[in-house]
Length: 407
Image (cartoon, rainbow, N blue to C red):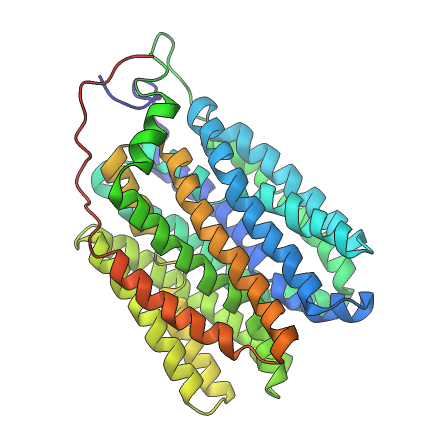
């Protein structure tokens, strides 16, 4: 008997899963990738410090991470459809209240808590659970690469759009428009509505047993450690690089192009990682990605800062940006199977979001304290070396188990 809850249910077509899943990730990730563009207009108009804005986005990332395992449990048990619908509604509500917030506390509640919880139900962990249950194992890493590439395309597409909306409609109206766009995820959720066959045992491995098994397994712990670094690096750069470049005398347009280039090249990087993950040991692929990130940052900080060096750095980082996502989730499916994949992916992603919280918050905190981002840049380099090392011992084979007991 198969080990996951939809084992005997009719599977969705791979094309349908990839199309609807990719479009949901495109919208959800595309909107969030442009939040750094709001830092200066909002803090200037509201009279807030950068730390106030950065703390709200730090809370967003940690809320996303904490809600992720819960969203994953619900999606594994009842299907992704309901989770995505709730997530899309929370996303729209969060963007509207983000525009209306006049205090740092309200801004933290909207941009932080609401949007963070919304992202937990509309991004990778939930979508990858559907992919894992409906795509054959030999195509799973590739399919996850396609979904991750869609999120990257969302960044490439949405960052210039969001910059244009801020410039032509004002930052508040831009958020209202994005709230309407977030509701597009509602009809797309119907394409991921899985059918459960009657009379099929719901579970063979309990949630408690799955968690004990995963958290007691060394490779799961190492994947979590690496993902922590991923979150720290990408969210620090995504949120603070526009202000870093402006502080160095470069025009805001350079930052917009830089974020768009990260998104564009991330399309190729994430898709390529999915393809390579079918052919190479994923632990080596992950180690190489983290090591190359550190090298890219060191070179960027060592050469004269010009628009061209910014664009080259953005292109290189784009190739490495979310390329950790397909191999990390594919390894989880290989080790533990797909029954609890969304939940376990949510816990690994929680580690990612703890890193994201520290990356975005320390970026603002240390900038306000020292007037420079240098400390955080070099911390990102050191953490990249650490992540490259800890991924090497990961064991990718299926975890040995005794015969599964029906619930």
